[in-house]
Image 1: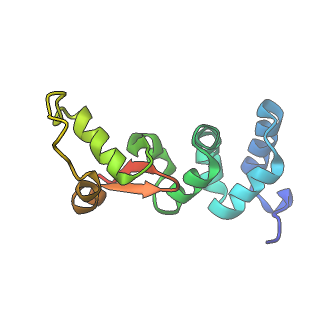
Image 2: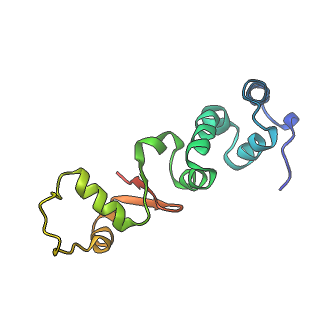
Image 3: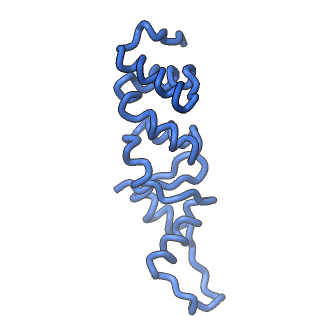
Length: 135
């Protein structure tokens, strides 16, 4: 992919590239890659958020999220990282108070089926176990 030159960008974008490089020492190549993928307007409006989210959650999950959703909704939709949908199903049931400590040890709950039959319609799994609310 051909790299954008700063001469091909709007002046406002060029100024922001210089500012981010000077203030935060962010790499021009990384910022130009973002611009090529997501556009100048998205860079100007969201790159600071994008950079912070990449540092906190990893580039893969943030990039995959951005394929279908607005980056501004990332943290509102984010539910956490789990080993599986079944683990998330168990955790959400505990958090909502549906599971008590008084359940006998011999009762078996099928958390995978709970995830597959019900919860996966209201939540999205991105990357390696990152769960987001779809509502």
